[in-house]
Image 1 (cartoon, rainbow, N blue to C red):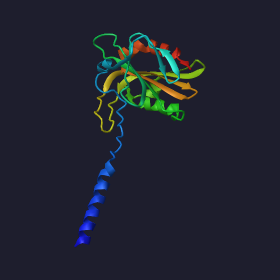
Image 2 (cartoon, rainbow, N blue to C red):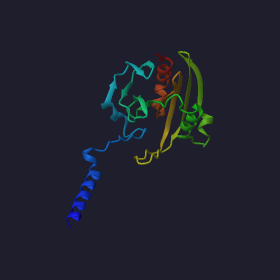
Image 3 (cartoon, helix red, strand yellow):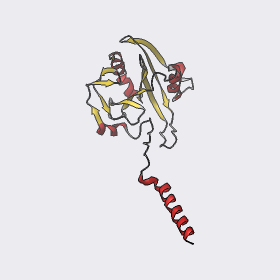
Image 4 (cartoon, rainbow, N blue to C red):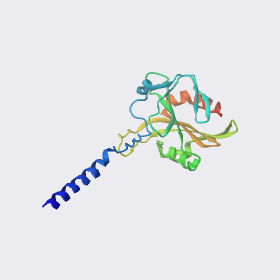
Length: 212
């Protein structure tokens, strides 16, 4: 009987140690958030980190923030920087410019462009890749690809996140800077009226970039 009680007590102690891990708490792994915009972009202005018109360092790239732009806290870990582009009038929503860097082996540039094209649809069902405007320039000895296109931005269906509705009359004005460290992606999206208003500023921002 004594042996049975000792064995039962020993078994109970072992189970307690296994369950509670000797008092150690399990490590908490942070969850990443959807890289797409959540809610209204204007709501992000409360998280301003950079006043309009100031200089900004993004990785080893340095540039000057154009007037009318506000740098805000990135909504996702995937984003290296994020800017809200003010609306040209009260009846149009603001746009955004988000910056991504996935390392020197980020995959083919063309594959990333095709992914951007695939997020839009044209009224006449012509592939966006056939309608997109593309330009290649040199900035501080770095190759830069500029693309722009308009259409309906398809609804986003990221698993586990609120679905973003389909939005008509949208525009993508973006750039890919081929730095010595790999490509940096500057993705500008928003209502067509807003993005056309900021198109010259986006180009100015990209052309003025310096690699440090």
